[in-house]
Length: 294
Image 1 (spheres, rainbow, N blue to C red):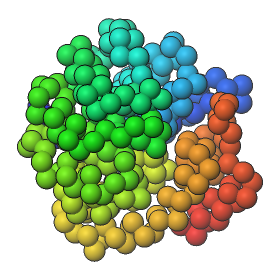
Image 2 (cartoon, helix red, strand yellow):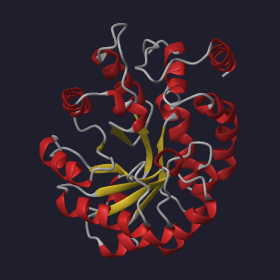
Image 3 (spheres, helix red, strand yellow):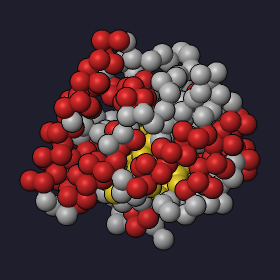
């Protein structure tokens, strides 16, 4: 079964809640998983950047993956984030992570190293050959420092069997359209930009891996479904209802923004691990005001 048939619609890049002592709050994580699944989302991504993976240790990552599989209990597919700039270490990680229940592995392109397009191609080819699950490319040049070009994406889609799709977060609509125009039929293309996904659906994207859907699962999932059915009049209404929230989610930091919203919704404690800190009081008040009028 192709990733396009499994993972179209709304995916959620789920946060990692922490207690006051900064240990992982599994009770809150369980409540959040139920909240987003009950809201109608289509799949969950665990251990994405929104989950604060740079500040989780190896055992915490393994425990979070295992807990997530158990709590989700096959209600929706689960994608596991395993990315980085050490290709050989990532290949070793595939053998160490419990991936038997995963639908796919989401892997961000190598950060900081700034490899050439050929280096990016060879990196993903090596991962795909070693991975027990399909690889979902994650292109987020604002974080990694290097764009995965449309040509490289299409080359991977056509030449590497275990590359199943891409989470495209380049903010470049022209690049998105080139990928959508040239992709093979099986190849999943989802957005990584909450504020852009509504128009991207009109261009042919299959859905989204969203931050905002942590806190607005019902509306966000409905917007995506409207867009997939070409009902853009209905999709636009929700898009503009959420537009101010998108700004607040990312104005200072992700996941500080989404955790600020989830705290106001009573789902988590507003705790983050350094170097990320909670939203400033000024922005948190704006979050509170948005939710009061929402």
